Length: 250
Length: 99
Image 1 (cartoon, each protein chain N blue to C red):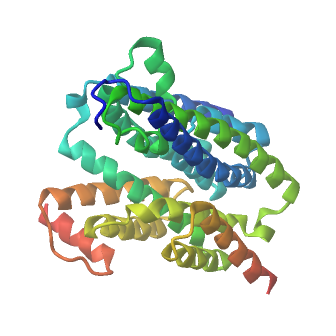
Image 2: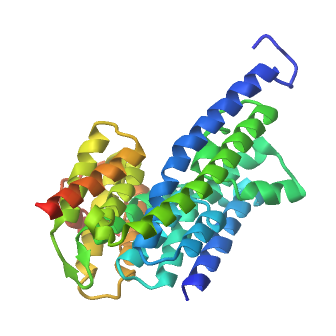
């Protein structure tokens, strides 16, 4: 940019705001599916809406209702949601020096730290542009996500038996769509396969909710151990064999 | 109990976000933490998919949900947006149950 002043032209900020709103509309749209899945999992409309207002982090919310839908205890849903929500901590670490907010502004901004607001602000090269990207995306996603959740929850209640509309299958589809962009690299794929194998192996023997947590813990431990050893060996389709190899080698 | 679970999850998710903005970067910005943060969502989501699609109480059941998931894979390979993937999964399962 030829403009040497730290304050960017208003036109550029307008573009950032427009992009932020576009991301908000796209993300808000799947709030409808969260609302519908929430009531399908047995929450009432108020509880479903409270989740979008209070948790305000999509993957955690889908995970919570997913655990409930599979018959898990609400508190295993909480634990799963918190584990998934931990990635927002790392986003915050990236954002803190860039946004450089203090005091109550930081306390308020924290609620808006999500995938989308992070993606739309970490790429900016000055604080004012980063703040515009963060706020325009965060606020528009927050508003549309919550309105959409209400719409989806009310519509879901009116629909009746969720199985008739395949809503139980929609949960799996939603998780897969969230997982898909993360299935890059051999290690991530091996961890995914291992988590599936352990979870399914535990389903017959444990309380619902436990297989997901135990499988995730096991897969992460093995994955971290593999990464530490710098294992570059290609991993076949048999995730179990991979796990045994790693554990034997520790 | 459900309300307690929702409130604890809400407060916890908020504090996780606030911690990132507040804690000095050097405390958490270590290779191990980054690796766990990268792998945890992959492991959790994979396990959730498995339990959600073939779990039924204490049994593993292959039914219309698996067809829904297969349809979702096709949609993702075709680079469909999130909402389309979810709708395709639901539609495939609903159609399978009708037939």
